[in-house]
Image 1 (cartoon, one colour):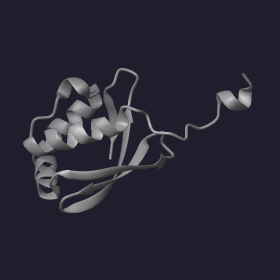
Image 2 (cartoon, rainbow, N blue to C red):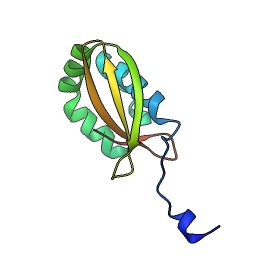
Image 3 (spheres, rainbow, N blue to C red):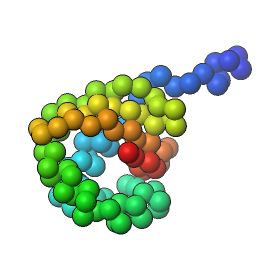
Length: 104
């Protein structure tokens, strides 16, 4: 394999990213995130922000569609997410263990 190919940037979404977005939005709207599926850093951030995250996701409503946009500059998968009551660009990193390592 050529060196150029080894270091070629990824252009497709991690197959775990979209299902993780859908699951996470539902869990946060209920105020019941599955902390076992978050890295320690994400667990800490989620616990600290849970009340505001829950309000935000309740206000947005159910997900209607999720469309992959790009692999962003930080290596996260960026998606346009259409909710019943709004839109958001969501960037997510799901690690090799299937845990959310970063989200914004």
